[in-house]
Length: 77
Image 1 (cartoon, rainbow, N blue to C red):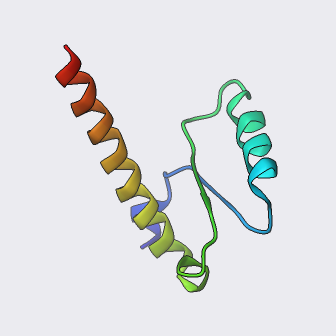
Image 2 (cartoon, rainbow, N blue to C red; image 1 turned 120 degrees about the vertical axis):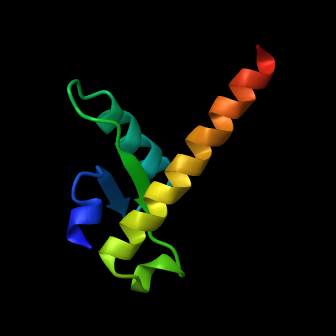
């Protein structure tokens, strides 16, 4: 499992409200030289998952979002 997720930059936030989460994400995104990071918060569903399973799920969701955005951009052209 480790080999599948070791190169996926993920930050999981727990215990923050929406405003705090937005501030944290903006601050981190403004740091030069960092790779693109997947941000997530804990939920009632994922809080009990193994971290590797959570990272795999987040990676798949990220892929689907990027795919949908790309398709939407292609339709505009």
